[in-house]
Image (cartoon, rainbow, N blue to C red; front, side):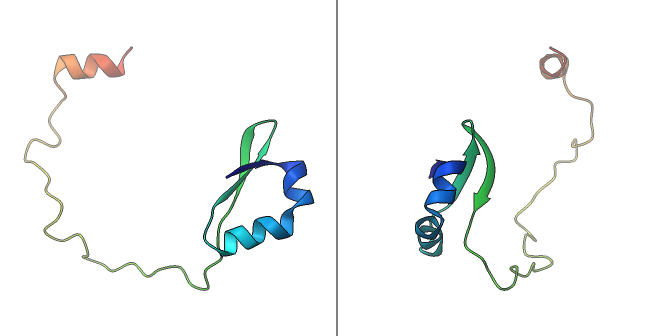
Length: 76
């Protein structure tokens, strides 16, 4: 949901209720997003080292130069 700053100030309690229910609110100034209201969590989720083991595969040619046709797309 996108709201402007004036609306956010006027309806902060209502917006916080929506955030508490799980909705994300974007606050904008002149139509440009400047802030995001999201539900607060007590602790950030823990990262589990090795959780992507056997899920990621890097090909042997990973560090080889890009083909000219693909490299040309980056140089436009």
